[in-house]
Amino acid sequence: MSYVAGVLWVLCFYTSASADPHKALIGLWSNLPRPQLCLAPCSKPPVIDGKLNDAAWRGASVATNFIRTRGTLRKKIAGLDAADAASEIRVTYDATHLYIAARMSEPNMEYLVSTAQNRDDAAWKDDCLEWFFDTNKKGDEIIQIIVNWAGVIWDGHDWKRKQDVSWTCEGLRAATGRGENEWYLEIAIPYEGLGVPTPQHGEVWRTSFNRQRYATPTGKRREVSAWVGQPEYPFKTPSRFGQLRFDELALTEANMPHAYFGVLKTQLAFWNSSSKPMKLTLVPMSTSSENRGEVQSVILAAGEHQKIVVPMLVRAEGTHVNAIAVYRGSDLMAVVRRSYHIPALTEQIQARLAYARILVEAQSQSETFRQNMATQVKVLEVILDEMNDLKKRFYQDFAEQAAMKESWSQLATRFEKVNVPKPPAKPLKSIWR
Image (cartoon, rainbow, N blue to C red; front, side, top):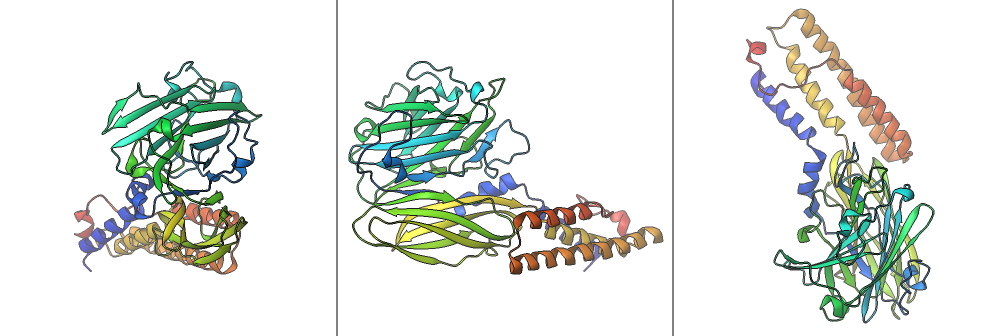
């Protein structure tokens, strides 16, 4: 390989290793099935009083793992990092209504913002929950409902991107409550008010749950987060919505941690509300072929609640999306997914090592410079070997993630101290003369 060809190869390698995680997520989002909840009907509707103590919520499906989409928090990556204040949404239904409950963690309860006072005031400028419905899955008709923490409602209807703010969801009821470090919301949405018939068994709606959080001493927006974890704004993007499936199965727990090397354990729980046994197939998925998990099958007896842990071995560095898809036969019932980013140190070290080896042969440079590059080559080779050994031990021994992160961080620090220049933006001809 010629020197110029060599440096061009290193440039391509280094550029790949340094990809912006946010930009990568925008391209990866649609590579896996979109987030989805399967819903089971409630036998008795919840009382809409803002207390969240009704039996209906115990059998409701849950949407958690809200991911930051934008805001003023520093050192956060949109579409990747978990929101600082957790949100938990529960959803159930009956023949006449869709019911939604929200539990919003808030460490700054004394600073909750609620400037909206009347129906259709600008509730989105307050601490609030927003959600969107695309009931026909075509993206041309979208219903948007917002409720702030004080219970003030804003509702609107879009037809082919033209918004009608005068539209009202007749019969909609909402109530809120407060705890020590959280606030609550309950809402009953009549299908008649939405202008749609009662959903049929197996029917799927597209939806998105989003939270606006302003609870700071200044009242300025601090955090915006979403269940679907879309890496870009705005919320009202049907191609980035998740889905609700009206059925007899509830996903009552869905917790996928942020991935790191080793075994990622996703905790799921289901309730079979039907009168017949139900066989489910749980399929681990990832945007990286290096991340793998075993397909599991479980049988839920009629009326049974069951908790399941789904492991996945995470090997891939860089930015990726992992998911667990739940099937009943060929029907997709639920999808739990989450993005992650592990600094791609292996590729960066390999790129820097390849460049250092080229510099060792740069005859136009001084002997001292070339000897130093030869020394740095040995240092990088040692770091790379230790990094590969560390990952191999971790996969075999299933060590704690905290220990792995600390060791990985130490290797990263050693790599940062290596005195080899980054590949230039273009080949430096003076090196090769």
